[in-house]
Image (cartoon, rainbow, N blue to C red):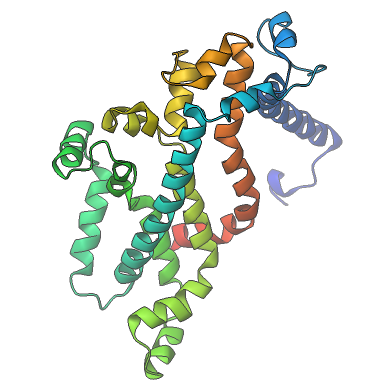
Length: 293
């Protein structure tokens, strides 16, 4: 006799599943739709609806035109884009190199190095020692403070190392017999077989760099260097007025909610657009590496 979970579901179970999925979908989609609808509504409609619009009958892109007109939000978007692109590229290079080395059993001192890395994962440095390191190394008030202290994520390193270990050893031995060195084996053999995990880990790094906000508050004195995550927190969630911002001046003439919602949309749109291109690699990239690790 088959267990209950392997049997054919009844009509009542199917209906219940459908209703549950519909409720969950509405809970996810409705807030997002409200944010987008409010951001593209006219100030009069936003004010008449108490600050939030569900159905934008009077469309307007004034909020986007104002925040993209060269103010602090525009600079923050450029800062986040630069930090995300450069940080993701550097993190991938560092993670791939370290993961490949730790995946090779013949690496001298590989196990102590791996244990040291895992120790930082179990006992991460607190805020004050990290701040002192950033200030002592001259990274304070520079964009490097958003990248270098977070160059390698241990979880991503372990997943990538596990994926590299799943590459058949016969392929690596065949490449060595043909005279290839370790660097050439990594570029020509391992990486072409690891597109899935590289894409997924790259997405993890990109999301982390794009959403970084707290570090900018600690490491930057100049607000013009803030990334979009910090601007989003200060302006939208804290309700603070941004200095040296065209948004602050124009907000008095338009509904502040439409400006805030436009900032939220611009802060989330790049990651939402990037996710569909990487989604198909998730199962192979993450599960293979995680199970092997």
